[in-house]
Amino acid sequence: MSLVESRLTLTVSYVLLGLFAFIALFPIALLVLNSLKPAAEIVQNPLGLPGPIRWQNFVNAWNHAKFSKTFVNSLVVSGTTIVLVCSTSSLTAYVLARKKIKSWKIFTFYLLATTTAPIQLYIFPLYFGFAKLGLINNIFGVALIYTALYSPFAVMLLRTYFIAVPKELEEAAIVDGATSWQVFWRVMLPIVSPGILTVALIIGLNSWNEFLIATTFLQKQENVTAVIAFYLLSGQYSSDWGEIMAAALIIVVPVVLLFVFMQKRFIEGMAGGSVKG
Amino acid sequence: MHRLYIVPTMIINVVIVLVPALLTAALAFCNWDGISAPTFAGLDNFRALAADRVFWSALGNNMVWTLVFLTVPILMGLAAASMLLIVRRGSNFFQIVYFLPVVIATAITARVWQGMIYSPVTGIFGILKKYGMPIPNPLTQPPLALFGVATVDLWHWWGFLCVIFFAALRQVPQEQIEAARLEGATYFQMMRYVLLPGIRPTITLMMIMTVIWSFLAFDFVYIMTQGGPAFSSELLSTLAYRKAFYDLNVGQAAAAALVISLFGLVGTFFYVRIQTREGEQ
Image 1 (cartoon, chains in turn cyan, red):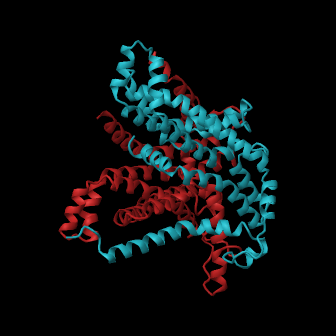
Image 2 (image 1 turned 45 degrees about the vertical axis):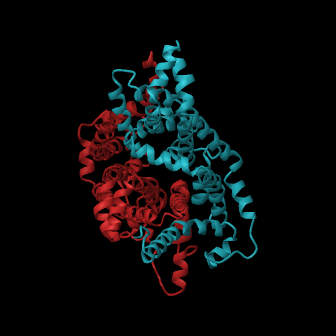
């Protein structure tokens, strides 16, 4: 009696999984490979190995996409969004998870509905409103929009972490005379901190990569995020694909490293937020 | 006291999402260029959209998009996830590889495909041409443009579904799988009678989300084709965006946004029902 799959099934599975892996990796390999080549070599053969590696691509990309400025913009936008989302959403998630208010159902319902609303439903009045208030090109304005955009997801994910905390812990703290704020701050928050880290990672990734809001609300070249700087570089300022791929690699490498390093949290969070509710 | 806890989230959400959304609903019945005062226009915007061929082809494209995403990535995800369950060894490595495209910015993914694959000058399609396999750049062919863009979105997207399905498959009781194995079930029998029924709630949820998300699709079309050539790859989301920011016809853009939301709303209804039912248990 054997519970192991037959050798044939295993082989076929590995071949197909390898094929899928090839599909996933092939464009990424092209990105890396061609970031190291001069434009002329890419035209000749995008699959060819680089002759001498052209590090100048990275210097050009860094200067032309103004990464010394736009990278900081991206970090500020992502950082601000993370802080705003984590602080406001953990409060809301706690209340909704523990049904602390009578109308918890309505608010849960409302937040769930907004996660599915198309951006086009609110971006037009928002843009002209921001323009009136002089908030176009303001990266904190963009962070505020991201906060509204991502906090329903964060609330839903954090809610599952709060629900998992045993009620007895909370009750014991109340018996000991803790105020409701102390219960939240001293008892609950430390227990759900892994969940907050997961939320921070995913929100950080989303705001780092975001395109539609950033391209609409940031228009001056020195105010854009790194992704938009890349978009402008590849669309308007350069036709040197070596340089464009080098710019892409500079943006992708930190994200991929962070992802591979923290992949359990990323995957758990992405799956948990959209599957469990 | 606890009511105060939800105030920050709600204020930000109401200011950024709810109020502008209500304004959009109102603007759909107005003429507005974004600068001067809006004037009431009744149903004019909706009539103009109904008379616009591009609107109907965009709506059709949205339907095609939804159908493609309801089938191809879900089947790919299920196939890969079930094989990950079979092989076990190395499944974590494959999972990471499949998820990589999900974490790369859409703008970058779009440019890599445009320049390094589809381009007849700098891409793989150029090499194929050199070796006597001339495949036209799909992004420049009206009948193919939508599928050329959808392929890129699929590449970026299917790994997410695979990871979610794999997570769900691991929750299927081991005894059921082993019992089926002892009875000599083939791969397809295992899928049909054990695995798929075991993760049906997850599949249903992902299909509902696919319907909702497919009406939100924007980035890849906007970056790679701007809805062209000749509006052949236009989606409702890019159409609305173009009307608002290029034509300064915010009224019609708002009307189109309402149409998008209407379709999303059907999916949202089922989504919220499933999610809140789970939460009550």
